[in-house]
Image 1 (cartoon, rainbow, N blue to C red):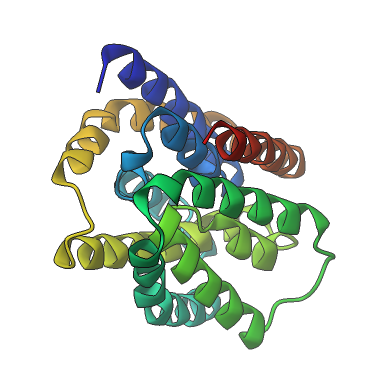
Image 2: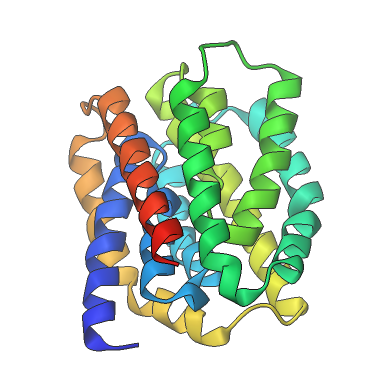
Length: 236
């Protein structure tokens, strides 16, 4: 990895950590397409590993607002779908992974932008967990289904529950990826090297998360993801 790529990644993960720490989603939607453009080999291990310290922090900071029931259903379904996400990685040739990441990002953003308001129940929790298990394991992007479920709930509940669900799922996905030979240890090293950048974004989010207009931030993230995904698809 060249110094220029490292600098671009550092700036990207700082911005992404700020966005997700403030609004509850956006880290993978921002980082995955940028990482895919810079080096497709960074997806999904680097993205998954980089999210772990951020989600530990957000889940702890917002722990009083955690939706335990919803998180339980989502996590159970997400873990059940993790092997399916791994199967997608085996089926998709490496040269097409960037295209798949871009397509998954664009579809996720479009669905999130277009979905109508609804009150989540058990079926919504399970469905979101299943889709997240597939897409996050394969591409590192899993936030939109969870954002859809919690988009009309209080921001603190969204942030805490999404962070907790992500945290469990990311660890499970990484363990399975490395156990089956699809993980690159070097990507963990790059994620570790960028922890200061992630911490900076998380710290900045602490200053504004309680008064930020989450709806506008969510719209910005999804539009950014849409553009980045299209660039990744066209560029590869």
